[in-house]
Length: 379
Image (cartoon, rainbow, N blue to C red; front, side, top):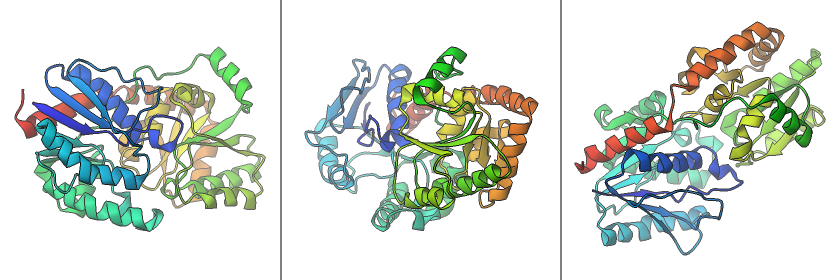
């Protein structure tokens, strides 16, 4: 069986594109090579930078385009015009489109992964052109894919409800957490804190800065805490996405410039240090297909507080604190209670470490490979 993957969104480097979907693609490719040493794979990518260390087995071939597909327009043109030709020319049996969209002229059976339907649930929180493109093409692609994979049971429900895909054609395949990710050594954390100029005590958010992440609610909750005497700083770490001006404006309006830090994109090799240095991770997003940062934080032994919406309660289970994301007062109370109770934080830490062990990229790859076999009838 010859399987092709469209990995053009795997833009490895210091940008928000290697958060979420990009990280999913890179981890899937590494672990697929262990899950399936037999079948033939062609992985289509844009030009990858030198830091893209993706070891390839003999049955895996990476094919990079000659021109950059980092811009949405160029990527769409490649997906819709060049990709069908490549699939035919190479005799592909199964295509995996791992981010929502199939080519309109797809010449072979396809597996489609849908990470979330934020563009349908919160259409006003994306640029209009992007929202319309995703709405039209994702709906069409979901109806024509042989199997649709989702990254959570909540997203599966959304795909069935909002896209009208029959339940029997939708499977849940959870993402994983890097087995190397864990609590950093205290000495390494102390050195990292010194090098980065970080305060001794801080609350962390880590993720792309974009509207559905609900950061204004976190900032308002933090303002309440500061006025009540909280001496923790707030660190909002992550690459800038889109429509994020209101975040910076609110920090200025509340005169929090000396207490709120924006360190920018966090490289993969620093994740454990950021999580381990923080007293809490707060993830207030109103909508997530899965939500990797809370899982990663739990794997590092950091207590987490998440919004009680979409897939986030599914990710943290009983190992995290939840709150209604429209209420800054409820979030402020949850943070204050956690910070004031060391025994509670220790219990959350232990529960989070156990919870994180339930998610692995090897299990993700096995679930995806099972979909390939079902669609392609291969070994």
